[in-house]
Length: 285
Length: 274
Image (cartoon, each protein chain N blue to C red):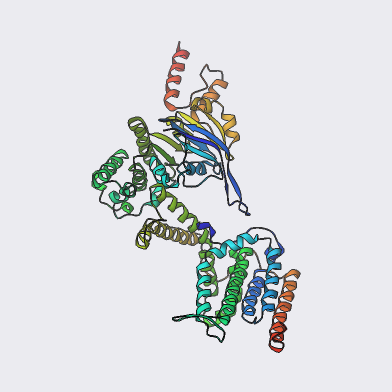
């Protein structure tokens, strides 16, 4: 399923003193099976953009086309759009409300009016994907740890079997272990189920590790798009937008400056390891 | 939808009304509300409305913004109109069915009540729109100060109000966010019968209460960590000070009150002229 955003503009509180242009003529195309990293400084319009994708907020002007069809054309179909495009908000654990983990995850599929068996199947499969063990299913979601709560909340979105999964800062405020568990689950989903993923984050390391393509938002505009290699090879531009390239980009830039013969388009720790080993061998020879 | 509630909201622009001392604004608003009940003629309402319009104009708050706030209490206004329309007894009966009687007096009464209600609400929302919550509660604390002797905890009441007002926008934002999150999971708040609609509120209310309690606890902790212990020996960053413009506003308010009394008196003496 392809998503096409064309000339999307959104103005909050139009015509009052609180007026604020959050999106300014944004045009983006997202293909099936892509893993998109959406990065940008606070207030750059990332969250507004993703809330448009499943029709939670209507655009001020411009349109969002899902497989060529405007999602706001038929109001009755919006619910179906929201099923196909799953959106997990920032701090999704604050939306938990049911008595048990199982019931909370079942909220989405129940709203989709699926049969009991189908609901059970999607709930179990979603909880397994995010790595919640069976013995927690009947516990209250409020008794879980922060990382577990977050994973249950994400499972609540996954249980609707979306074709596109949008995650808004899924690792914010988690400890390193919780962060790794979530990112691993997201990576698995992308590889195994072939779900299109849009990951909103300002952790460059996370995005660098997972995304095929990066969209950089700045002041309501899609300022840059490209592969991580392309984007991270211009750290100066990123810094101008209040962002930073992954740490490894800086390490290799300064190595180059010191006169070592290293490539400058390295941004993950794994690549860095390989390149450094190669360098050490060269120096020895 | 949820952002349409403007009661208690502050509209941040710089205007002569915004700059007035909050105590003056509180007093004038009180005076305005009291005098509204003294108005007994068409001319009187016209005069009060014209004065209010001037103040709105001076406050630089768009009228559209104020009318939006009225939308949320439209039901109360309509209900008042309905009750007055059919329950007022009078001589000139126009229509009669069962316990419902429509009279000329009823129609006049309904119009009067609605105008009064709308002006009450716009008048008081003008206060909150032009005064920051902090200024407003400081003013309330000042007004309550004389009652401290008889055991009214003026400072504590003011602090509680400050906190409550401070959290209105936060909780509204939170509600908005939770609603969106549940909508993303296919929740439907608009269709279904009354029972289904009430049930659909559970996924909003439970997370909202949890977050309200969490915030309350965090705030209490943060206040204690900064050694807050109530009123004793507490100083202010911004002292309230009366300026020339405040005395001018006071004079205008007094003139307005006299005019209202004058119109009331005139309406009694020459009921057919005014």
